[in-house]
Length: 296
Image (cartoon, rainbow, N blue to C red; front, side, top):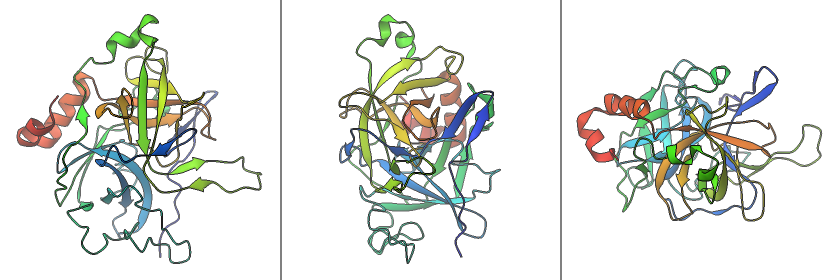
């Protein structure tokens, strides 16, 4: 029997409500531009479903996600990643399966090593929990058991890429693109409508808010998706990429980490991956051969 565990446990920091994030909201579009963004399902030692997240394939076998997704101390020991744009769109709540992709339990026939892969190698950057904002170490890695060969992959931004945006002048015209799978609308607890989840890869553009406040301090990237033509993140997008630039970009500067509004209508935070320390950890984790494939 599957476990029913809520991946997006709410955590409070003083008067701030911080919630791990999981999906694209607002003025989103279906994301056919980033085939290397995948839907990751995590399992415990008995192979039971724990939670789902998003992430970015940086090479045929290196998958970048959030540390709170690859949470080994939380019980995660293995994962399966789906790269179909509509990976869980045909999910049947009665059978609790998507008959097309096999989500969340199997890779459908003919998809393993093509658009679906498993992972028994899981790492996180000593994720400390969202109580330790700003430096949560919220970065994780999966090494896929079956390589996924694509025409392009996500590209790590060089260390310091975002530093020029740390001034108020740098905020001008700074656009980011977020991508992921999960909830698109989250109602109030007593609202009559249900949450909306397409389980498809969606994307939207966001704008920069801050890099240097007490909640960021060089570790996080703060964006917001309010306004015409904009969108943000919600439950299911955790670990998904934040690209620097418009929808055509594949330059990853952060992984979706947490939000300040439990209804996913506020400001979003991503843990930066364009730092020397994070990239040194990635290099040490994957080893020189794989690092040579993904180094910026």
